[in-house]
Length: 280
Image 1: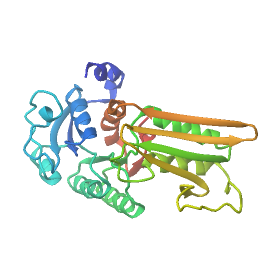
Image 2: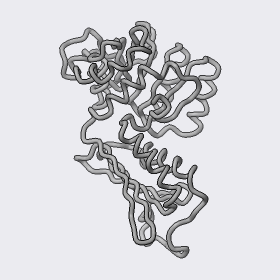
Image 3: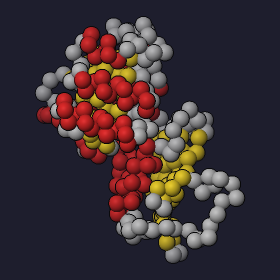
Image 4: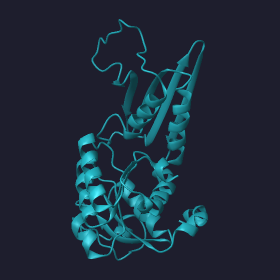
């Protein structure tokens, strides 16, 4: 945890007071890492933890730390009301995250959604509630700083290389495909390149799905295997050359600097914001 403190010393000028954080999905692998990161940061207070699979357990002990006297609740609503919360950070799933975010907004708590898979209808509903409550929402498909740079580099490359495919690789317990990062990358590239359909005009699949999913002509491929964490490569092709931009998260620790940054800066935002780059 000392590493996080050193990393964020430069952030303290705009951290005026302690930020109370509730972690949803606290028993999951990402949730446990977030609990450790919050407990290890001097500017943050773990105000609550929620997970239906671990109700009643101490959040710190479950994450491999000494007891922190925060018992995991099975209700986000209860966790938000038991203690004053400023931020809810959610690593559950798309369905639960959307519901939890609505509860947070109604309790005037800023929701940060780390779960991927929210659809446009859910995001639009959050946008309406955020406008009404004047409390912002931050949706982050990927908290790693390297992934943000990868997407930015890919967007720049797309101006010169219109032929591109995206391959994302995740652990076999990830339920949505393609990943939120892959979709966000494709959307970012799409803003830079002119409408373009790549590949042979008479191309066909002998096996449905062999060419992956498609976003405006950009092919996306998902790999799910045990042993993986979170990986993505964006492959550009041109006459006589290839350009590959790749990012690898070797451990979930890679997400924590971005998580802490999001928690500290997100309350300054208004409306619905998508991507860690909105707080960089």
